[in-house]
Length: 474
Picture 1 (cartoon, rainbow, N blue to C red):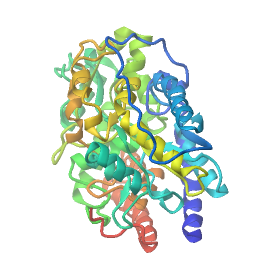
Picture 2: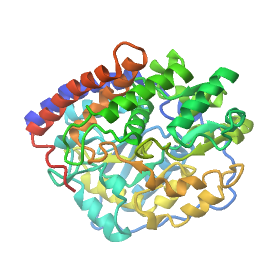
Picture 3: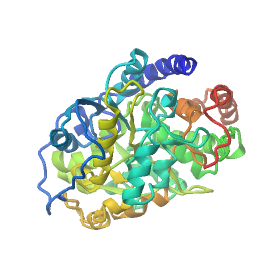
């Protein structure tokens, strides 16, 4: 175990530094991520009442939770008193610390290194690299599935290691990653319903930039949205980092084609600022009318509903863009709760996760439909909410396309599972760097792919030698 922890520590202190440098205080969402909550729009109907189940055994002591500051601030306003009320009911003193998404990797690694800290930590991307230092949560997944049916495969593949047969995290919820576009900009380009394919994005984006002086917002920077967008483009062109058996396949004609396409997209429809964005830049640009399209969640639009309703009414959404081979994006956020192996109260942590899962409909409501369930049976209201948004969408069915988001969303590591190697590639931004080098003309697309492969193969080899990746079977 000590050898694994030492390896983890070296790599993650490096990766955490990159994350902290590349992500802004407000990551991945709208203006609400700065920590100030806009005034609430009264919902059109009442929130679900929630439920309570007695824990399977008596609980006591304290439970400390570390989590991100939610991109929809109304969530945190609800969550903190809600979890503390649960703690009071079961005899546990609960404390909650919210920190910025960009600070989570370094903070988690510091606690793992010190072997003390929070009992329960929530990350928003797969964290397979922490497996040597966290508890196996198979018992939580088993109990949740007994109560609510099978876990969504997207979430299972983001939290389960088929090689070790351990759940290194528990993923009860996730967030779709649609395209967000300004209809007033795309209508003059003949695409009032937004781009449906990557070719539409190139053609329409170039026309909007030429005629209206507004660029696209697909980043190639060291931040999470650029990581997600690059993978979406790879998958849609039939490329991937690994195959279903966890073998490196990044160096392929399909990858080269995707990198060449991104270079053309940059030349025709973007400007150099995309190389230095933080994770809030695309949201801010969309809301300000400085970007025509971004690949993101609904949080920037939710914030605009309160800060500038006219802007909100002009923002619409598209499903995954279709490429030559597929139409697929990564989940925007993947909830990954981990219980470090030093946790002082793991029983309370696990019972809270089950309580949280039992109330995923309450979670979805208080996130203003940002959070989607890994157990569909707990949120039977979701389709109805998407068809008629309780929080004032104009038109009311603006989010209806998200009802089938599982059909075009997938996990980091697709077509395999999330694994320790994929996690490190993600944390060190190999993919956005690959696209950026070719787009800037530093190297050819082929050379950018060769260089990325040279970075990726040793990462896979190192983790494979430690027995944490293998056949990749399910």
